Length: 201
Image 1: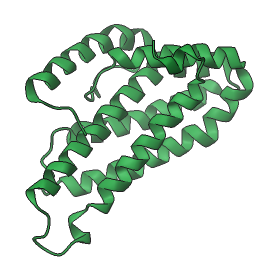
Image 2: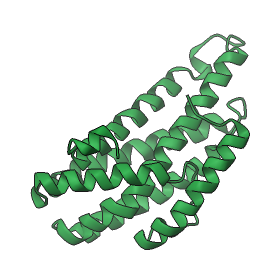
Image 3: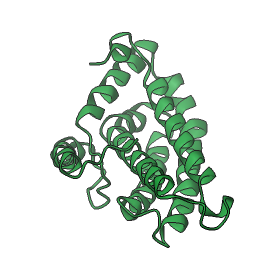
């Protein structure tokens, strides 16, 4: 377990870190879009950098969603007022994001579909992050004690070590399926990452 989890870091704080990282990467990718530089000015290094950043968005997003489905949404369903509806809506949003991540995963930044998919991901991803922060987290913070939030944070942090690094949109979001199949998929993903040199940024 990480030092942050050992110190009792709240689940909300850990999820916020992921949200901040995803927003930062999306903003940087948008700032590097070809239409904001003169024609022909985007070098091979710029394309390589954009590809690595897109990989990092995929990796961060996939691990984040996997541990939410395994640990966070079950708690929301059990403990938060109107939690079943909120979790169902969030998981539906996550499924949409996973489909876009799946299409974007490994796509060459020079491909004509890269920019439209990135715009789609940015819109859907930011809407989902905003929904979690404004509609779900306040109820979680009311329903759980500081110690319970810290315990949940430790579960999330531990789960991220084994979580998939690639999208698996066909995998059911059921927590028990995710804990078993998700770990198998995560191990397979890390082998593929090692073989292909895929590390993000």
